[in-house]
Image (cartoon, rainbow, N blue to C red; front, side, top):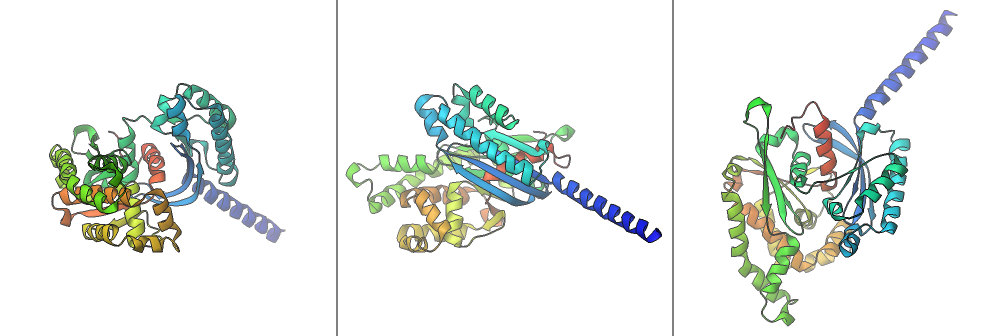
Length: 365
């Protein structure tokens, strides 16, 4: 009888231990669905240390849908897009709740800033809420850079780092000042008028004979000639922010840096933060301009390289690296800095939300 009771007690203890561990694990799981410009992205993270940005991506889904283009064309979200978006989110929410059993307070849905221009955004909001039982918010364009900084830089480096995100239209980012009273922080935004596409378009406009605009030798010549204008803009941004010189860690994100890291390092790096050097960027630039066939040949056997080349042609890649290289060369004492590529840009906003809700991180700015 005693042995029987002991076995029951042992089973009871083991079950309690199992459910306790399982319950604890759920606290570390977070899910985010981003309704973006051209895709609906779902990420599920296991966060082990938010201060050091130590996490694992347990699941990622990328459903392509040209939402921003349709908003630009009609000024609203078409009913077909509303239905598709709702169906995708419902399906993803089933996976989040049933398979990963994530707590409701750890599930977030956001929409890109472009959705604020849609006349019928309320219709999309009501549809999502009614079908998924989860509301969402549209990211405020004025808050976008702050969200990127909070989510891309490990909180332990808030006081010692800066972020620059090289996008298609502009380069955005910022840094944090932490020597204020009452444990408050101040966010300083950074913005450069040039991005990969806008710089490429600006260079193309300098080609006098537009029949030569697609000639690579002509484009490279004009691109080189345009660098002084680019450097002047960068200098203006840096001169307006002298505190940047004190930051010892530079975090870089965006398509331009993704393209560089993928093409130059030629490996599937698993780290969330990939160290890089100015010397590597300069060497990559030479290959881009003088031996581009190296990347074309590599794309035949490397899917990630092929994905870069299907996203950017040679002209865009040259413009992207011109911004990257000129930025790094313009930062004072760059040789003493540590430079990182923020690989998982798709989870930046989710990490920002997690940091906001953590008692271990000060996001009082």
